[in-house]
Length: 337
View 1 (cartoon, rainbow, N blue to C red):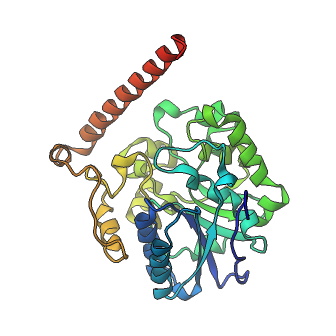
View 2: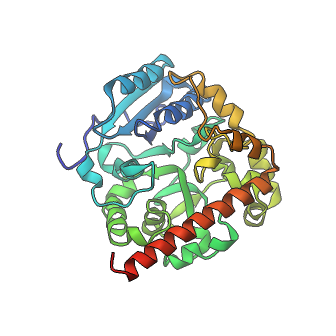
């Protein structure tokens, strides 16, 4: 359907069949396949339906590879094509494009579905998701894990106009109450916020979701979205407590490699303890030939450094680059370019 979203409706609506949603373009498809394979190996595949969202330019050959992998594991897959016009005018991040917005359309894409578990592609599923699939949502729009903020972003949610900093969630894992989202037309609200304020927001997709949900979501234990900060930074201890952080990293249900490219398990600089787990599942997908990003002699040498020193050096370089970009942009505006 031109200017909208298309796709067959889901089959059934019961707690026996678990419905999972994810989205990807061609570039991230190998990572998406890796995430899905980890999901299917930790859950009964015959009781899983994957709702895979993609754009109109997705290669049919690549799509067939993913479909064959999912069906070969015994699960079902429902492919949902999102028209480019549906995401026109929305702010995007480099390398992600309109794919980041596809989840906003889920309430309308699956009109008979009451809930769905949405998963980002930079995740690994390490346990059964049955507990969060069956959890009581009530009138909450979603269930999620609070976002872990760096100290310099300690007032991020407040600056967005939200009531409390603690009301802000990380959107990598969402148990979405589709019935409530449809009832209150949240898709329209999220898109309106994104189109009106997108260029002013730091996280163009996650911020509008949080603003629209306005704290009306259920908090999950951080093991359900074990973010990088739990492994590497002590400010996660201050937010969740050392005991909860230890429980999460010792028994993660979902590992989330969130953040910039060098923190992803497919990058040479990644020092995450579960990078090897990602490579294990990746090699079992149709995209088994892994060539790590940033695989240079310089990065191989840098990776030898202790993590804190490595991250400080990489972070300092990124801050300097951002400063130069901002400075050059400001000068261009002043000069009338």
